[in-house]
Length: 210
Image (cartoon, rainbow, N blue to C red; front, side, top):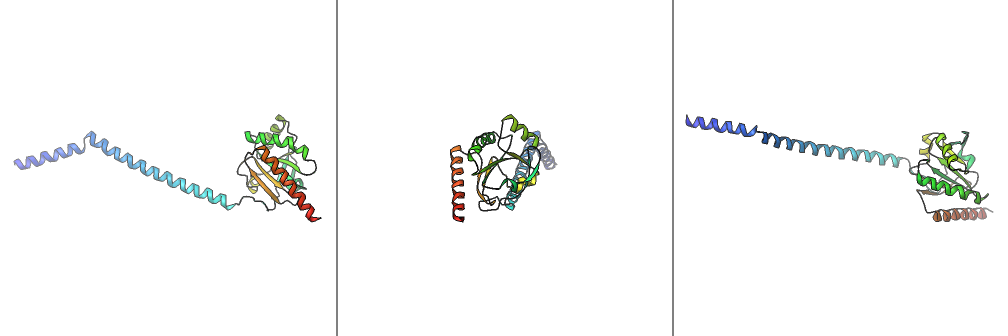
């Protein structure tokens, strides 16, 4: 009988300890840790999958490189007249892609606005905004831009030029062959040197043809 009583006592003590507040908190804490670990693993998996699809998408459409024929896309003038880039690229052309909301782009456009009148007939310069016509026109008026400025007709056109960052500058010869691409803000001395190199190389090409 005593043995049976001791057995029941030990059993009740085990039950009391198992269901005590301290035991419950300990169990809950362990459970929470498991949930956190599982959540962290799920987040890592989502991030990895997302990065895979982003990289695959970027690689699926190759960036424009020197030597390629520059794509012909439709653009809009400030007066909302639609025309093709082919109409703009009739000789050596520098095309500056920008955004009206970009501080670096403002510096870039001001630079080209000051430079383009001095290039005379050796080279044409035009700017292409990634923003809508209304914002672009307001930008042109606010900063008194006299440089020819155009906008994209569709977002597909932006993709066709592989615009990944602004400002972005394309150096295109009269045969619509892309000669150089500059991405991001550059030192103005560097840009001036690139302009000089571009014009000299085109003069050399024309001399060889003669």
